[in-house]
Length: 272
Image (cartoon, rainbow, N blue to C red):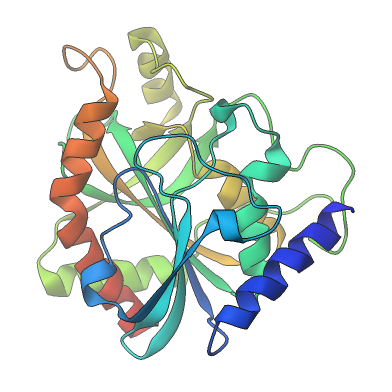
């Protein structure tokens, strides 16, 4: 069975569980899976283990399930957790859930992640709207033969993060009194945290944040013609800017930020 056939089989099962046709999909990152649960209506859960061909996440804070429900009268499909390249899986597995969302008919994708702050003006607990990214992983999820059913051989990433959705997010944050930062996200391959020298190099290149996810999914979503909005939760200062880095700290800060992030995403969905 080729990759298209696998994606279509996964899509058929998800379609059978949907009461409508959601136009908005979401990917919630490390420790942020519960940010929308309090404001969702008619929630139904579906574990990835029940969906054929789906990869299974191995990282704490990534549950590996879907929530299907309505948010301000709009049906949404929420992906709790993601697959990272550092988990040892091929790129096709990393971007598989995004491909499935596209085949379900989703045109707008809202993504979140936990990130280290390179910008000295960022503090743990800040939310940052991504304006662009730097792929520092040394690879690309589209490498290899192109399948025109997904998208063009050479997709344009000039507007990888949709300007209209960013405007909506900024207006929503302003109305809610949330100090929403704006910045460029750099992806490294992980799983080791970056060295202070690498952070200094990324700062010189123009990065405000650093993490180990999101960029592959953003590339795949743009390849498929989806509009993308991404928000980072700043969980710590990057290497060289604080004593040490731990995943426990990441989960602790995201837990405290869940409510604020959930309310912001809800207001964004209301305005879309």
